[in-house]
Amino acid sequence: MANDTPPRWDRRMQQRLARGEAAALGELYDRFASLVHSLAHRVLDDDQAADQITREVFGYIWENPDAYDPRQGNLRSWVARLTQRQAVHRLRQTEATAYAETGVGTAEELEAKVRRATVAARADYIVTSMPAPLRKALELAYFQRRDYRQTAADLSISHEEARRRLRLGLQLLSTANTRPLDGPPGGYGRTL
Image (cartoon, rainbow, N blue to C red):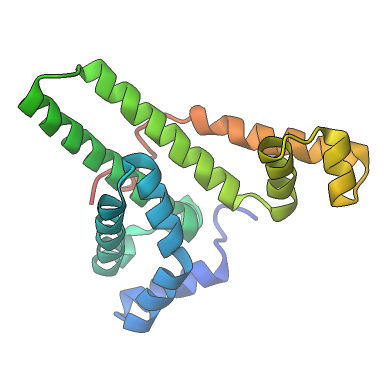
């Protein structure tokens, strides 16, 4: 699919939100709340903070439905970027406050912590977004310590197909560490 033709659901959802349809926000929340919460929790490692980020992200979307530009990608990715940016912003604030109060830590340690949390959140997002056959092959290989032959047998696929799925899944995961912390232009990089 080309970048200039976003999915129909994404366009309709944005239009409904722009019209102020509360049901649209509920539908969007039902679809993406677990993604938002899990990404925020992955960065902050705190359920209450993740709950707060979830409220902030959906509040921002409700108040700024036109901030989403379908030409920049799908709605799911935009919501994930908003979440990541807000969670990283909150992590920086929290750590800076802790540093000011205790004097323990350095700016370099803070940025290393932010980088680790960001990469972990991106990896989680990539895994949850990849097609189920790739995700299942990676889960078998990683969590159950299966090699490609065992993965092929478990999934009832050929050895070549198992290797292909594992290779593609790992290639996708490797991109988690390649994007800079600052995102693309167009309002996606600012905090809420």
